[in-house]
Length: 366
Image 1 (cartoon, rainbow, N blue to C red):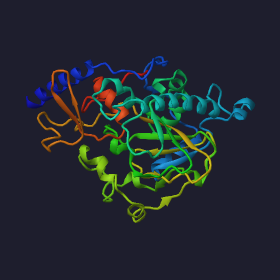
Image 2: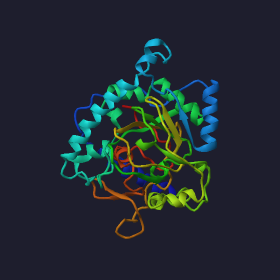
Image 3: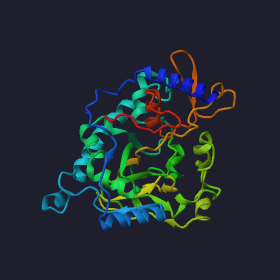
Image 4: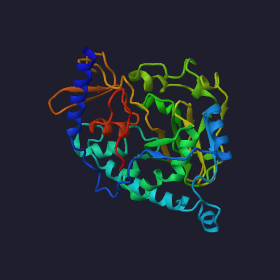
C-alpha cells in the first residue's frame, strides 16, 4: 500500500513539474519525425556483425564512413539519401554557434530555476571552467539535424551495434576543441545517464580529418564489462555515481586496463563506445580545431533508474539526498539524484514529466 501511495505521489509531483513551460532559446525550426523509436531489420551484414562483436568485447570500435564525403556520395560509394560530412559540419557549427552565443549572454545560466535561461540548460548544460566548446541537443533546433539523428543509416547502425531491434535518441552534442584546449578526464557516460540499462551507445563522428595530436578519444579496453574494479561507479547509488569517477587519474586507469591511445580518424569516420566504457580525450595539441558530432542512442524499452528521485522528505540540505533539487509550482521539492552532467538532456525531460522512475523512457520525438 505504501509503495502505491508513493508512486501516486511521485506521479503528481512529476505532473506538477510538467506544467512548467520551458522557454526555448529561439523559435525552433525542428519538426516532428514521428516516434523516435524506429524498427530496423535484423542486422545481417558481415561488417555490422563484426562491429557488434568487437564493441561488446572491447567496449569501443572504429567505424569508417558513417557519413560519406561529397566524392563518395557523388560516385555512388556512399549510401543514397545520406548527409555528407561537410554538410553536417556546416549545419552543426551554424546551430551550435547560435546556442553558444545566446547562452554566453545569459546572466543566470547556472540557475536551473530561471525560466529565461532554461534554454541554455536544454542545449548547453551548466557553465563552468572553460575547457572546450560544447552544445547539446542541436537536433531540437534544426530540421536537418533532427532528420540526421533519426535517419535509417544511423538508427540501423546503432541498433546493430547494440544488438537490439529498436533504438531511441538520448542526446546529441557538438564537442569542439580549439588548439590548446585542455583534456577531458576519464569518465563513463552512463554514470550521468538516468537509464537502468547497459544498452547505451555513443557514435562520436569526426567532422574533419583528425590525428593523434588533435586529441581524439582514448579508451580503457574492456572496462565496460567490469563492475568491481574499484574505479567504476556502476554499483554505487545513483546519487554518488558522477562524483565517484570525477577524480580518476591516468595512472588509476592504466593500472587496471590496457589503454587504447588516440588514433587518426578520417572525416566522416566514427568511434562508438558503450555507456560504461571508460574514455577520455587529451588536449588538442594540433594546429586546427578538433570537432566531433556525437549522438547517443539507447535500446527502446530501457527503463528510467528506479532511484532517480529521492524519497519524499529527503532533501539536499538534510544530507539525506544528493543531486539537483527542483521545485514544483506548489512548493514541493523533488531531488533528482544525479549531478549536473547531462543536465541539458534529462532536466527538460524531468520538467516535462517524462522521467518516471522504474518505467520505460520514451519522450516524444521533436
